[in-house]
Image (cartoon, rainbow, N blue to C red):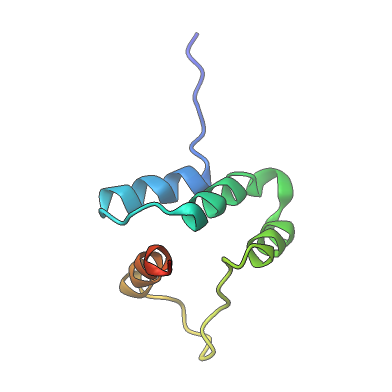
Length: 82
């Protein structure tokens, strides 16, 4: 019997960024590993770990959600900070 493998959040984000041709740097890999554990760690601990490695970005001050374009720009900027 075949088992269904769950796609983890970090892996899903990595696949999307690869499809968008956004490079994968060391910070991206740290984020992927931390996000893959969100089900076992919970949201609060995941955010704490992302902050600890300097990857977490808070909500926009206006309270609005991020647009897709803004998210992609932040991902591209991550890999350009070297």
